[in-house]
Amino acid sequence: MHENDPTKHLTCYVSFDPAIDRDAMGADFALHFGRVAERPDLMDGRYGNRDGALVKTRPGKRPTTFELRPLRAFERAACDAAPSAESRWLHALQYALVRAELSQPLAAVNETVRPLPGQGSRLSMEALDDLGERVGIETLYEVGAVAYSRSKLSFFGEGFAPLPATSAHVLERSLFHAATLAAETSDTETTDAGSTSQQETPPGSGAPGSVTATGAAT
Image 1 (cartoon, rainbow, N blue to C red):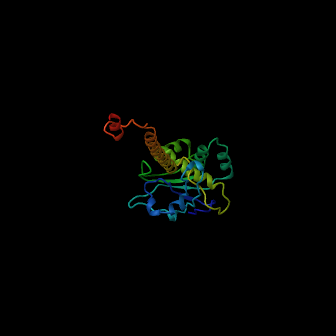
Image 2 (image 1 turned 90 degrees about the horizontal axis):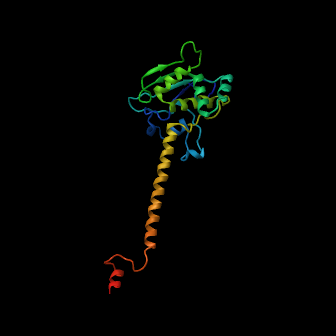
Image 3 (image 1 turned 120 degrees about the vertical axis):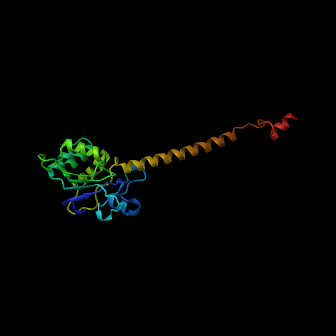
């Protein structure tokens, strides 16, 4: 397969597939899938090269893969006419999918999926829905985003297909960022409350047994 040539078929992996050993890949993970921002709302993602040679898997695990073909001009036009990014990605996946090798744990079953007979080279809506039940809608979005992004490249264009904002990997990072902000805010409020409590205690109002209370009793 040719990862950087958008005129060739591509074997596409999914960034959050549990079979992929992200720790073993190290920096190659970002090179393959693209880097997402520490804050996804900043739209600071970077393109990945989708080079399959960079992928490392966990012992005894086989990742799910999707073989994608390039989109034709009329197919790209049909995708562009869709009303949302998600629908464009799903349209692109319907056109581009040649074969899917589904494997657990990402997929619910271990099987090979191809476009249905009689549907030409396009996956039917029924088959797309069935595939979504096996691998999840986030997987369809991410793979479809790869297919759609490739259609925008010229011959041997540079890296392509950043992780979409709906990717489970990106959402995980976003939730982690939100949790970190919440913890920092909570710590700040606790510190501020303690400081205010000490500053607002008037002279002579100490608790019994304190130096101030003893002096008042005298």
